[in-house]
Length: 463
Ligand SMILES: [Zn+2]
Image (cartoon, rainbow, N blue to C red; front, side):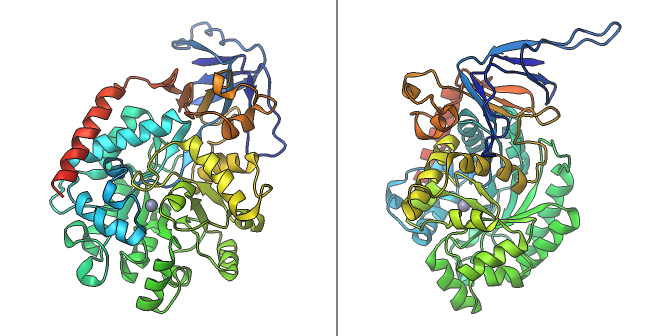
C-alpha cells in the first residue's frame, strides 16, 4: 500500500473545467487501485486473523501537484535510434521516410528491446503512465516475437501498454515508399495479428496488456489488407489505428492512386468508427470533420511532429467544438525527437493558439486530451481520474522548484505554462512507483542510454 500524504494540490479530473484542486489531501493506494482520497488518511489496520495488508510506504506530496497519469496514443519506439539524423533534419515526410527506411531495415531484437525501454522510460519520467506503440516495420529475417519483446520492455519499465500490430504490404515495386525487405505479405500480417491478439490482449479495463491493429497508412498497405484487418479486429473487439491526413502529399497520392481523398477511402475500407483512431488528422475539410463526428472516429494529435516535419496544424479547436474525441501523442522519436509528454501538452496548447489566437484552447482542455480522451482512445475505461476504484496511475510534479517560482496562483496551469525539464517527481503506474524522485526505479538509466547509443551507431553505420 502507498499513502500519498498532504498533496500540495490534487486534481482528480483535470480535464473537467470545474475541477478544483484538493489542498492537503491524501491518497491511499491499495494494490493496483486508488482506495481512498481525503484528509488525514491512515493505513487500514490489519484485520484480526487477516492475511496482512502487505508492505506500506508513505510519500510526502506536500511539494507536488498530483494529477492522473497521462496517456500517449501514438509513438514509434524504434525511432529512438534515429533521432536527429542530420540527413533528414530538414526533410518533409515522404523524403524523410524514404531515407530512414534504409536505416530502419537494420533493426534487430536488441534494437527493439532497448529502444522500447528508452522511449517508455522517457514517457514515464514526464508523467505518462499508459502508452501505445505503432510498430509497422518487420525486417525480413527478424524471427523473434517482436511484440513479446516490447511487452518485456514495458514490464521492465512498469508501463501500462497497448501496442499496435502495425503492418506494411506495399513496397517500392508496388508504388509504395519502403524497400521490399521491410514489408510482409498480407497472409503473414493477418496471421500474426491474430496470434498477438490471442496471446496478449486482455480486455480488462485495468489490463497492463492490450493489443490494437494498425496498418501503417493508406499509402503503405492495400485496400484488401485494410478491410481484412478491420474485420479481424472487430471479431476480437480490439481497437484500430492508422496514420491519416498527415500531409498534402498523402492527399495527392490517394487521389492519384485511388481517385479519392484519404478519409473517403477509410470509409470505403471500413476503417472508421468509435473503435478507430487516426494519428495526425491535419488536412480535413469541413465535410470531413462532420464525417469524423458522425462516425465517432478519434484523432491522436501530434503537435511537435507536425511542426518538426512542417506538416501543418490540426484543427483541434474545431474538432473539440464539434464533439470529436481528440487525444494527444508525442509521435515517433525521429520526428519529435523527444518522448517528453508534459512538453507535448505545452506544444498542444501553444500550436492551437498559433492558428486560432490566445483563447483557442485552455489548460483544462489540454489535460482532457492527455488523460480521459487518451484513455478512451486506448480503451481503458478506469484510468484517467483519481477516484476510489480507479487504476492507481498518477503523476506527481514538484512545483516548489525554482522553475515554477511565481507560477503557483494556478498550480495546474503552472505545469504547462512554466517549468523546464517537465520531469515528474514520482510516477505511479498500477500501484507501483515507476519514477522515484525523477529517476526510473530499478533501471540503470546511464547503462540504458549507452546501449541505445551503441545500437544507434551500429544501425546508422550499416545503412
Ligand atoms: Zn506516426
